[in-house]
Length: 269
Image (tube, rainbow, N blue to C red; front, top):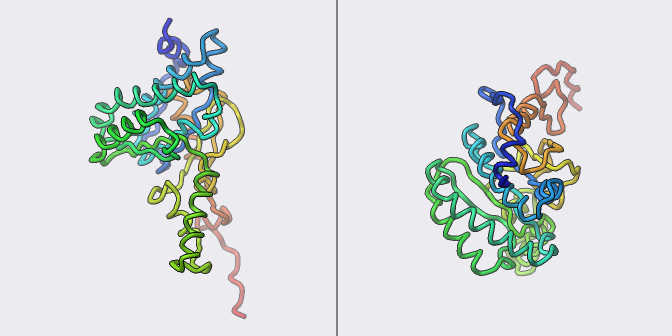
């Protein structure tokens, strides 16, 4: 049985969830974890798990587009992943661009725009050229923004931003008083992209793994034990439904958010 058939066979047979009319997040970020463990549990090489994970990317991207989500950021390859065995790194680089080239016509048909964030100076030239080709091909699309974090780490991104700001202060283009949340955000690789409303992590691990640390300051977190190759459209809809039931307060009280705060206004000093 192929990895794709194994994945399809493991999908729940329950009817597809409905998210119509629910409070949709504008931006969903996903830590796609569990490919290797999924394969090992089935007695397969880890590479087969990564191949099966590509199928999950396809269906969740389609589900996000269908749900009207504006931004979907996928943690595809971290800077720490460079420390994996060279054979696995080479395979992942090849798999990423091969899958993207195969999916590009579908992205265009679904009006999805592709972009990449991360330290691409470490990415092989052949991979970078092919990534550029896929991004150029979808640059005109105005629907879902599919963002792949490749060779990415939040500490790298924040260090890069701080260095940029420090250089501007040294050269007199900025003063220390100019440094603000907004300025820092403008120097990140996600400049111009709204912060994630919802962060999903598959595979059961309860950590952030150096992903969008600045941007997820107020994101809602959703962790599932489901390995990424098994993460279905129903699972995605379950995460969206869970998000819709939450109250996002951003430091306020629940009564303030709902407009039911009847506490007396303090007298003027």
